[in-house]
Length: 255
Image (cartoon, rainbow, N blue to C red; front, side, top):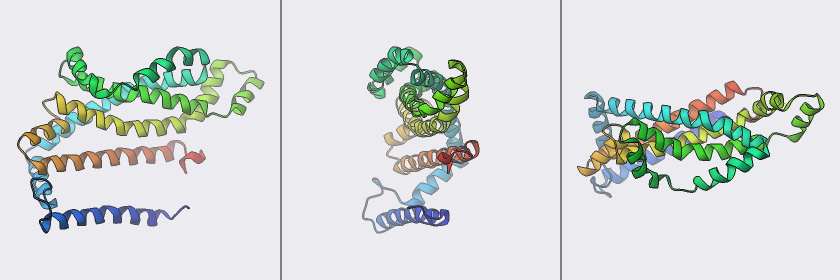
């Protein structure tokens, strides 16, 4: 059942506050040793220290750059391919089985290969993000296109539109809200694959800092960066939701 937006926000905030209080109680009452779970104050102090000396901003800048480029490359290629295989059976027969085959290969297994192919620079990070998101995006976009009502396409044929015009004027506009949802969901995966790449081969970035902190048992830094990743993911998700309401305001999907 639908609820008012204010009530929705109150419930969401209450959940976060409850988890925060539980964390504070567990550490304040020493139910958990600091080496396993540092206190909220310790985490906040460490993140403030890293922000003051510039480390946090350098890591954040490196990770934001990598995920932006890697995700844009994957999306720019997956959208037209997904639209084509969702619209034409011949394209689907030629591409969909291969994409379906590759998407079951674990991204982790490509990390050492990506280092051999592209070194340890940013190109390797782009490649891991691409492998982790592109193939899933293609199949999800294909499904978005297939959900376009056949009546819409039939109307286009009745009006004498060519296949190209049916695709550009009917199919793509009708599938766009679903495609946008696909991009929003896959952006969350991109964050995961970015951190994976930075955990293994990097000299900067949020994942790299987590690895370094692990070596020196700096649990407060690890927890702080994990929370930061959650905040970044939540912000990007909410931004894309807000843009969806603006871009597809006329569509019931955005309500």
